[in-house]
Image (cartoon, rainbow, N blue to C red):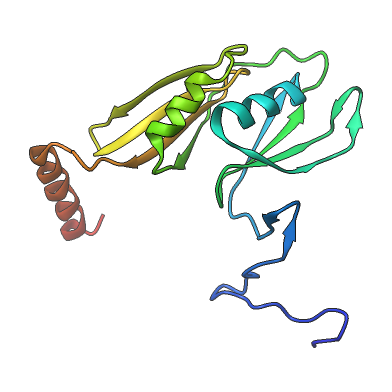
Length: 176
């Protein structure tokens, strides 16, 4: 039922709202996937993500215990990270999950990341060419979380491209 105070919003083929509006200059939409990282220095890590990787702050929760209770970061649509405080007594284990994001601007992203002031465990590797025909920029944030920004490799080795094509075709034929 549509009412004056709650108008129906357009939905996609799955019934998800297409756009829920805007907040702080950012589009609000159902996030199909996002990462939550726990860190001891929410404000410092947030600033590093902004300076090194071009993420912006969609939302910042009020401060509790001297730091934001949560910061919602976004670089591009569907590239969302929530930064939350780690428990004060916890020793953070090394990251075991790598977050991968599509990015066509690898060279400028690598340049900006290298220009940012290093902090904690932060590291930048690449862009590198992979055997699966992508170019990847591999980044470790100051808390040890790994991120990969990946794009199509326009200069892939033709023999490698052909091997991959044959592999994929064989998979289609076998129904796997």
